[in-house]
Length: 161
Image 1 (cartoon, rainbow, N blue to C red):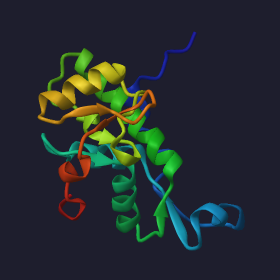
Image 2: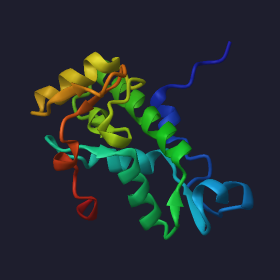
Image 3: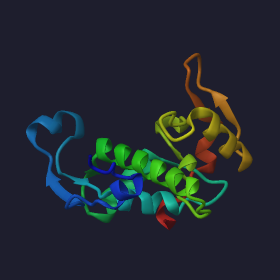
Image 4: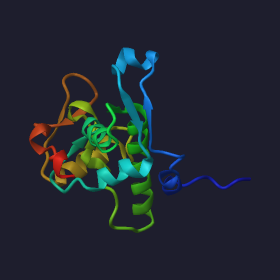
């Protein structure tokens, strides 16, 4: 029986990334023209690590940073989202091993300031962590989603990351 790959191992596996590619005809319907970067997991994690206490970032801001870094038109939304999820689970895994300095994944939000319920501990964990840092977490409309109230005012300055 083979050993299960840890979240930290998944985070460290770059899979020959990052890679910049041309936006093909199929993708151009959604993304327009130009190039896109498929980031490496550690690149996404490195950005998430830089978000200080009391601040937040969204996946879209992470994508902007990655696109600018690689001189691409955009960063792939799918892989960026997956790699933030891997980063969150690797951080949770490290915390369960007693490590104190972990990636503050709870500060990374979805578009519109929405909490990512797929991060470790679910909404309860995220709400507690964000509230402990001074954020107000509110329901998003009538949906089951929650968001950081006035999150735009707490966004980290991506030009300083």
